[in-house]
Image (tube, rainbow, N blue to C red; front, side):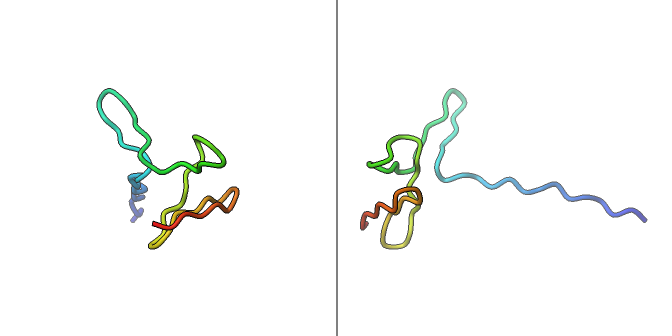
Length: 57
């Protein structure tokens, strides 16, 4: 018998919120790199992967 292929699960991003009318960016941006570069959220800090800027929570 042929096995059924499972559809890939779609992950919801925490960086955007989608409304019927608009898409809003909810993630924190890097103040050095500017809009478009999100900062990674860790347990005790935010950090930029591009320029290594770090902020404590």
